[in-house]
Length: 178
Image (cartoon, rainbow, N blue to C red; front, side, top):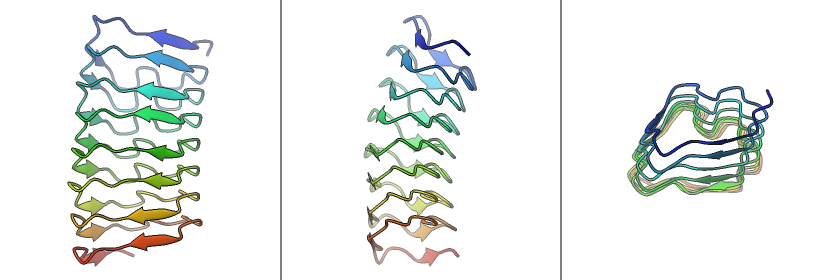
């Protein structure tokens, strides 16, 4: 577990599932613009990773991609992203804020579960569902504005959001699970 930094060459177009999972000392990674896909869990449990820039040609933040990256505090998500997978940022306990691009249409179940430092987040207008456990354990989250595109809020979506002071639920919401 001595791998501390990686510079991926321009010849690489794809990073496979769980490629660097469990590299607990990995603190710095440079991903070239040539990369168009990053597999599920590729950086799962890289607990020393502090920042990441996702290349402009990637369209999916796959399931569990950054799960357990407890030092991650800076993520640059390109406008090309249209989907954030299940548990994508789960347990990223140092992440204070994140800007989700307007083109994102789906955010998977528990994507931000356990992001205990997360204070603010935007939900794009294309998203229609606040999925199950989406913000579970986001104990620093203070305010959430739900866009008019949302029609359903899943089970435990805001469970253990102890700092939540304000939530505005629009008339478009027809279902709130319990």
